[in-house]
Image (tube, rainbow, N blue to C red):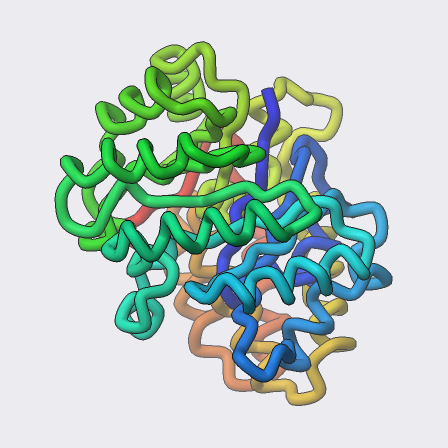
Length: 322
């Protein structure tokens, strides 16, 4: 079984990836938050930093590209090849309104003829493996068979299917019937993505789709950084408060080196705690103190109290209601 760490915009950049890779195992491949090349064929400074080889040493990383212009994808893929990457990933899943309104991400699924022309051009001109991360449609699962017909025309390295519609965003239940259709029809190797928050959820998906050997974890890994280890049965280093504290320290120090302003560092850390607090039973008051911290000192004291007074529950997972 191959386990992948999903790209999460604003969360799983190179600082996070390095901290996670240093403190936890079990992940076969990481994906960058999307790169969005423009017509001037330049990356932002943030994007440049995120894909620098020296920022990702020892990390099996796939850059993800978000665009609906074949020439921009081809340029970005060439830039990634020059940096030593051997695979790029096309984002057809982002449901953000600002992205979809430009017919990018999941919005591109609404323009099937244009998508087909786009794929035809990039597969002719890109000298790298290309994987695709997609949703099953915009507003109805009946859209998916036509999309699968398009995908099957091309030598896609892996088809990562998040079986939700764009209109679902991250709500409702993943449509496993549609994923089952992909299992029957896809010519590309499939990867399942969607609501794998616990080991139990993984076992349920694996038992339903035994032929699928790739699973992408997102919010589940953000909440429980050891989830991939737990799925694999790695028990040498169980999840404890001290182990999470070491991970937190590596992440916090990494952000303090990368980000000059204290308030922006705290913003990053508080965003991470939206997920990580899920691992601590009856810890809402600790989470509130972390969220309300206005200085590094207040933040550090709130986190230290949590690690000192509570132990994580290894079987817990992300709770969408939080």
